[in-house]
Length: 166
Image (cartoon, rainbow, N blue to C red; front, side):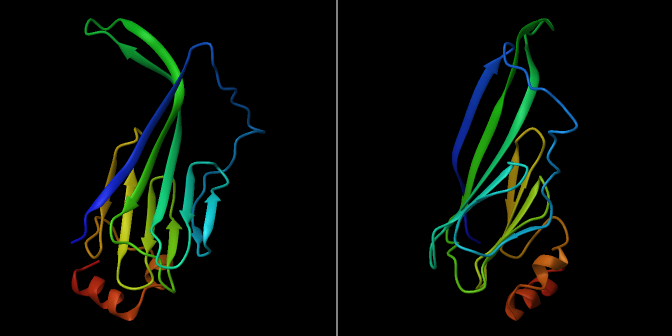
């Protein structure tokens, strides 16, 4: 089993002087079912995900950001110490993953991204609404592999997934 690493963790804050206007005309639909198969750096329409892959035999980088609006930090007595608005950004990579012919990154939704190296390594990143994350792979996953991912995998990876019950 290959180890997965979180490369960086960034956190920026803007105190209550900064507010975000919520208008139905400015809300961008959530990115779902987004397939990346070209080298380069790409950002999802909703701005939540960024995918970077430089070229063949190169690692990928996934950046997932989220905006936290009016989060309260409290004292042990229940009092509010600060209310803040800010952005949380996590950068992910998987050690050993290198782009080979047939590679892809599939952003299933705001919380799950599937990354296949084109050869034998499938990797899943799950991120919850508070920014906590978990990584899975190359053959064992906590959920079914989406058909959009499964259909693009090599025969040997598909067989290994069936054998492991995924």
